[in-house]
Each structure stands twice: as C-alpha cells, then as structure tokens.
Image (tube, rainbow, N blue to C red):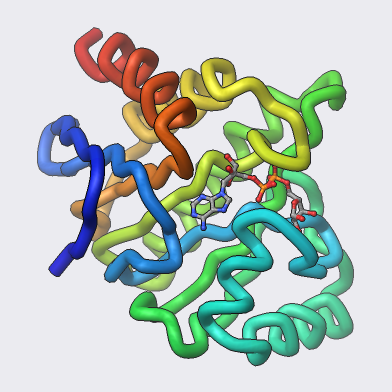
Length: 186
Ligand code: AR6
C-alpha cells in the first residue's frame, strides 16, 4: 500500500509503473528508499538527516560501519543499510555529484543506475528516489530530472515493477513533471 497526500502522476514503461509524488520520502511504503548521501555516509542534512531522524540512529551506525569496512563510497556508487523503523526494508545510500563536477551528469546517471542495479540484486519490487544532488549539491531540478527520467526509461528491469520519484515541495514536483511528461512520452 502506498499512502500519500498531495500531487501524484503515473507513467508506464512496458511493465514498470513510474510514479512522481510530491511529499516526504520517509513516509513511503516501498522495498527500498534511496538516500542522497555523501561519500562518508555522514547523514548531516537534507533528506539524509530526515531518513536517520525518522528511521533511527542505527541507520547512521550501520553507515559508519560500512565506511569503516569498505571505505568511502565513490561518487556514482551506492551502499545499503537496513531502514530501521521506516516502512521500507532497505536504505540504498546513493552518492550523487556536486553540480560543479565536470563529470556530474555522468555520475548522477551512474548513481541512479547503481541504485536500480542494487535493488535488482536484492530482488526488490519497489524503490523510491529523492531528487539526488538537487539540494546541498546544487543541481537544478530540470537538469537532474532529465538525467533521472532517461535512466529510469532506458533501464533493463528484472524484478522491479514500481519506481517512485519523490519530490519535496511543489516547485520540485512541477519541474520534474514537465521533464517526465516529455521524456516518458517519447
Ligand atoms: N523527502 C524527499 N525529498 C527530500 C526530503 C524528504 N524528507 N528532504 C529533502 N528532500 P539533499 P544532495 C529533497 O540536500 O543535494 C546531505 O547533507 C531536497 O529538497 O538532501 O544530494 C547529505 O548528507 C532536494 O530536492 O541531497 C550530503 O552531504 C533533494 O531531497 C548532501 O546533503 C536532495 O537534497 C547531499 O546533497
């Protein structure tokens, strides 16, 4: 079940439902929530902090344990932890680029693809993304939306049947909707 208030729009790519939702990602009942993380998985602000606050400090502790064991996560890469008290089963921590990174677009696409790959590897059916890199990391919504829409559209899905993109606030939602309308209808 998916509980949501506010705006929502759905698209179909063959068997996959893609949903744009305006709201708080920590409220969603999906198999995995994607976090917009930094390479050290120190969840100090933005959606990362919201996830730790709502899901519990164990998410931060598991993240630190991951970095201790495997080192920092490269930009474009992902790490998985449990989701603590959230309704999701996992948090997939995806490290997006900062907007000034000259290879940012490529790395943002990679972060989204790596998240989908991880969800498939875990055998999941549903995943929710925030607008990675559009907060502290400075990406304009429209540019991030195009990259996300293209990756979600062209991905080769196996188990996943639902991909949610959760936008925080009306401005982000409207910008993503404009771009998704265009890319998904091509
Ligand atoms: N639900 C959905 N989206 C949200 C929520 C929420 N509860 N809260 C914020 N957003 P950001 P970044 C949106 O800054 O740009 C952190 O400190 C927000 O409006 O969280 O990738 C990390 O620890 C924006 O559109 O991520 C890293 O150091 C989007 O989520 C750094 O920020 C992403 O904003 C990562 O920066």
